[in-house]
Length: 446
Image (cartoon, rainbow, N blue to C red):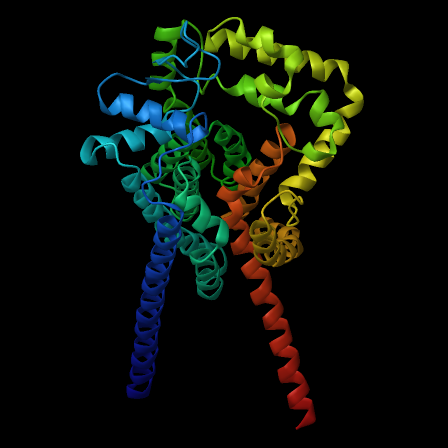
């Protein structure tokens, strides 16, 4: 009996020591990740204002007006004053999530871009912990720590933390949603269902393409809880609550535009920029996107004439649908080119050399390991009823976005953490096989 107690005591002591070591490693990774992000941001210009006409300038316009009590208003493309300058007006051109966060920071600290960038660095560092949590739930401690270590110094993560964009917030919300969903699968309570739904709704309010994940979570819930109908209902509530989160924004938009706008009025830009003669014929834009007003002169007058963002959005959408219907021969080419561009580690020659080398050396090895492990891990999860295949659905939501619109590292970045987890699992698995073979060979030799 005393021996058994001693063994149990030793096991408990080892477990506590292991947890302490893991916590210390995570703390180091968090510090390294935050310091790296801040260093890159300082190097690029901590207080540098956004470039006029950029996405960041639009986010900033809405955020500053919100902070000053003028509501969600600001500039949008091709809505101008008589003097030709962009008109500030109530808008729904972009989803509100990013600007709402910035507005909160502006209200507290003033109109300071340095504060926004530092907050994004903090979100990026916290995402390291989310990557660890997701990896631990799906594959265990070793894979989790390896994935977190890679993500702590991941070049794309360092870069996006320094830019005034929606990616840091969306990535944080999306990864948090994945982790809470995995926790919900372990203990399917209503509070966890509600938390997952709220996070997914907030992600949609930051980037509209998260709506694809709202659809994909349905088969995940049905499969995971197929033996317990009441738990299926709790899983489906995630999607329902995510849509409920859109209601206030949709009501606000209807009051202003008298039209149903659950996401944004920038969809026409995305659609027409993705389906046109240039994208279908110019190798420079293989699998990519162009800006309709400047790059499609045959449509310019139709797009700019309304001087109204809602009508402009409808015009662009109709032009894109007409082009798609008239050019069925391009459908396969467009889908194939977008899929390849969305995954390739080889950037085009006009990209800066540092970006090309960095992407090849970082994303290249991860892509190979990820591709090798993607389907085997999905099959394993499905066979064992492990909820970890939500990672694969998360990646699939990016693939759908790329195929429907265009291949972009901006679309891929929010799920690169999931790809790193799957790549790390593949690497650990291969190391395990090699280690066992070495042990067997050594045993036979002896």
